[in-house]
Image (cartoon, rainbow, N blue to C red; front, side, top):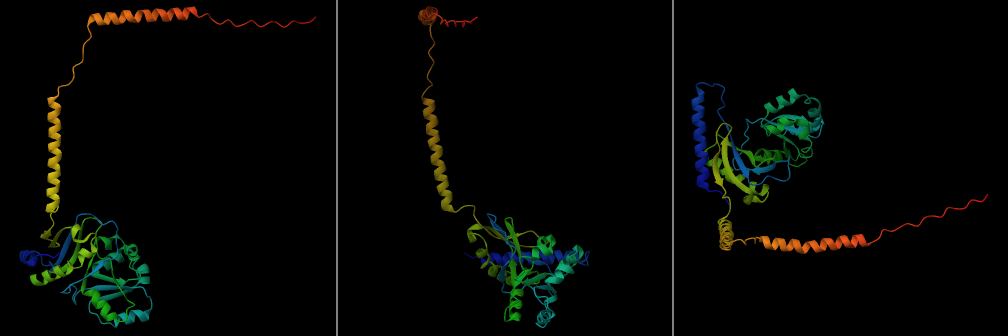
Length: 315
């Protein structure tokens, strides 16, 4: 299953026109407004996922989202200076800061230090060997802002290629609810490039969703300040299931109607009232039985217990 290409391009073009119009209207009043906004892809599923997952799915894109101006922080498990120097020599312009796991536990233990680290960088990468232990170290703020680190294999032979590949992807984290979002581009891209990224992402996302396309209810795009523009909406039920349900309901209703008509046709049975003569006759027949029972009770003598003989005492 695939998306309608023309509809995707139209939705991307409409969203870019809205962001441009909004930016022009705010330029006169808000001098600190951002010129470039992030574009998100929203995925709504019918049923919530049964298992929670902290490790995100890596989704390759045709047009990279993170350019040279993006600030990326790399967290490494190895605490040696030699390893840190090796990572610095990669000369990847996006990586602005390298933090060891020991530094994260000591220098960034305070809440203010973590908050400053969160606001400084747009993306966090980490050694895939420690990705499961980082949510507890980083705290709730990283989770709410959807900035939990994405895993990278820092033991790979070609580190340059591994890190560059991680920066050319976006990351899908299924939410605990029914709606999830992932970064798909920016307002600086054209409508065609946004459409290419959306179509490329939807080649992988159904594989990350439980039951695939059958569990996807709707897909849309939005920015941080706009409404969601729909791209795809699933029908509540397939046409065959709807027809089967209607026919079954019609059969049940017709059967119930027939039963109601038959119940109305047969009147309820009337209770017969006893006449006064029959009541007197019944009372007369019951009197001899009572007198006979009294006679039998009087005829049975009461049992007399034998007296005990007093034992003679010898003088």
